[in-house]
Image 1 (cartoon, rainbow, N blue to C red):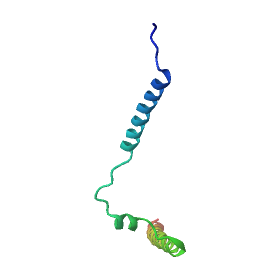
Image 2 (cartoon, rainbow, N blue to C red):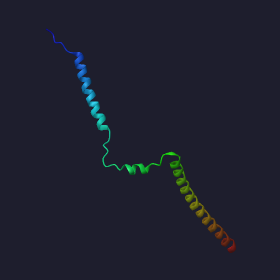
Image 3 (cartoon, helix red, strand yellow):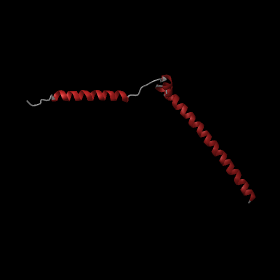
Image 4 (cartoon, rainbow, N blue to C red):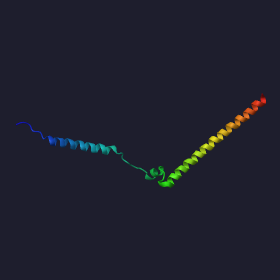
Length: 93
């Protein structure tokens, strides 16, 4: 008598093994969260709603205004130096 193979059972066994391997791979793919400070994470993100968005925009605007003031002060100083330097050069000539 010839050898009979249970083809359907063989396919089911292979599929079952592959499914278990995929489950293990998916479990290993997710990072383990240990010692996470939730309050610190929440503090990193702006508050929800319009009030949080307005506060974030206001903070950014104040930073931009301060930077512009610094740049303008530097430009004014350089212009004063250029003007005072030109007057001394004309007086000497």
